[in-house]
Length: 118
Image (cartoon, rainbow, N blue to C red; front, side, top):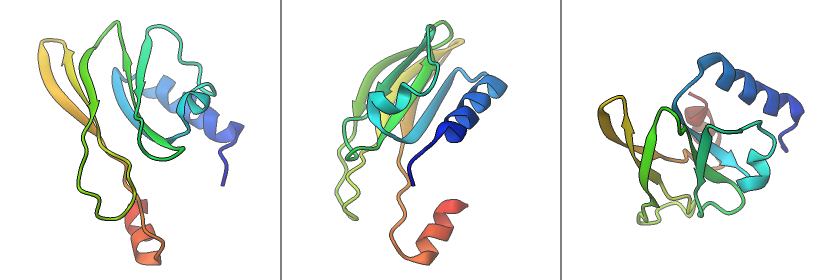
């Protein structure tokens, strides 16, 4: 199912509501997908290069968070998903940590799809 304007507005409302400094999104259709969100300065982002047409994206407020060493980690392929974890080093408010954004893919069976929903 293709995303629509209602989906895009729900994401914008969540971002506005929580006012996060840093977040990870999955199932983003690259720059074209991000174009549906009003992400202006101070927002910055990095889009993963793996994952077919839908990628993992790390978003951060550049006025609050410093992000460096942006990369994807190549893992052994066990399910064919090929959506590698998107990794960034983060400094925020005197705290340094590593953020790993992963794509949780369900297989096509009903049990796997239900598990992903939780």
